[in-house]
Image 1: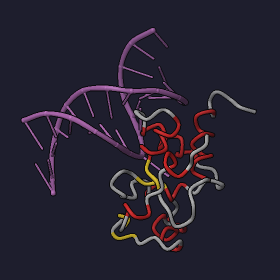
Image 2 (image 1 turned 135 degrees about the horizontal axis):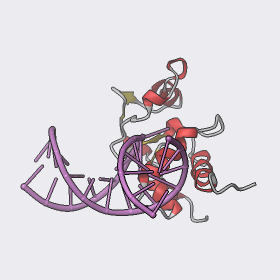
Image 3 (image 1 turned 120 degrees about the vertical axis):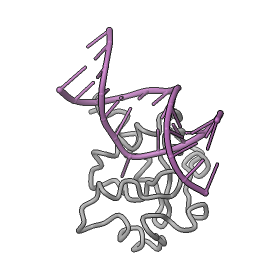
Length: 111
DNA sequence: CTGATGACGTGTG
DNA sequence: ACACACGCCATCA
């Protein structure tokens, strides 16, 4: 069932689940993919209710900075998860961000 | 309906 | 390169 309160959220969740392991994407990229390119805030906000099915830890800001690290439990820190996937993280910032950046608009011809 | 908030992005000084 | 301001849009009080 699609509820008006979650239609936008589900879209974000769907794209987030499509993020390949070892890759990361930005809010703006997802926002643009959904059509709300001007509202990267909404993407992050939607992920605020990130269900366990959504690898929200793979979503960072344009700088490759883990702005959402404080939203993750210390038991499963965002950095640890990213590092565990082979992503190098230093000081809450992803290294080689441009190389592991995954853009749904370029990688996904469909949707 | 109005105002405020938010895991951002881009532009300007 | 850094700091500040504006925009954009959805949700909540």
